[in-house]
Image 1 (cartoon, helix red, strand yellow):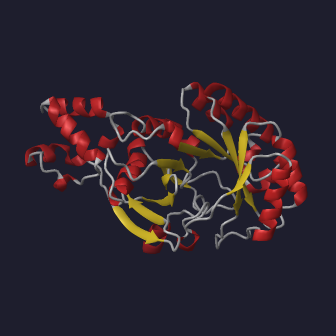
Image 2 (tube, rainbow, N blue to C red):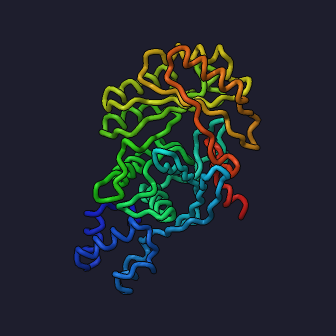
Image 3 (spheres, rainbow, N blue to C red):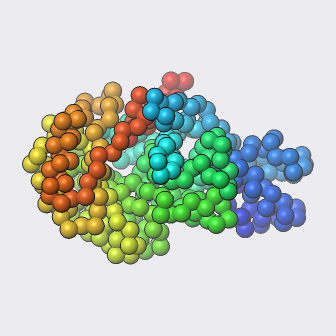
Length: 342
């Protein structure tokens, strides 16, 4: 897939087709603008025929608009597979939540994305394709981007698709590409400890966020199967290493589940666990997934929990829920359109 190439690789690809190098630059520019093949006016028909089999399908299958202004995008790839992404507007800029896999194999109890397991990994170019499609659809271009921030929090576990995700990070942050700084990119993981170390050692400096959701390994194993492989202690040790290598503060996501992990005792245990760490706690009232037998905490309980953390000098915030009415909030993304069509 051509979007897996950087500019130099695109030029080499074109030269191998017997075409002059400048055609590679023209092709690369068209890709960054998310142009479909028939829209490219400065390439000949014969050249387009040569590259047709490798050219990506820039297809937004459907858009759903929330009452809060959030837009959920449903993307279809060349093989017919579908993923979802979410575009959110904030005062500081526009954030796109992208997917890294078709489905997910982590099996977290509260998440819709992994209900049917993992179908396949997305390539680096397919992850980048989501960014380029939305940037164009929102009226942006390479110089005036409408996508200013990226969160890898859509379908899939990013570190379970390490090679493609890190290649995407290089492509999307390249000066010759769309040039989104890694400091404006957040990667969310359920805690694949060896990959956190590798991410730091490989020189990446994205914002690291851990899906924690519990203060004990016993409780965490009940809702997150990955906890059977890696303990909370191991995760925190890996996060400290990441901070030492990158200087980037890390964050913990904590989804509040009614009657499960939202008591003041839980808040005290969380504060004790994280005391002194250079981190942020992001509280998330659990979003509704109809197939899951779990309910989110009410507003009163969320406020009590947050106030308790703050009183313990823990840096914490409540995440603003966006796109819930279009099933675009945290934990709600899935291959729903494909299910409806099959």
